[in-house]
Image (tube, rainbow, N blue to C red; front, side, top):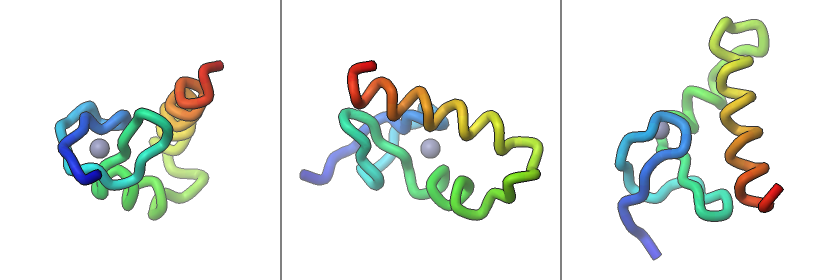
Length: 60
Ligand SMILES: [Zn+2]
């Protein structure tokens, strides 16, 4: 089902793109994550957010 869901990374309403459990990651954030170098200053921040999304999805 395609819908408009809040992006778990940027908290903006976006078209369903990458669904992890009940969470959505919009195309912009997905591309940011994919293109982010591991030594980029934003990398730890995104890593933590994804961890939270996954933990929430798995009910941990
Ligand atoms: Zn986003």
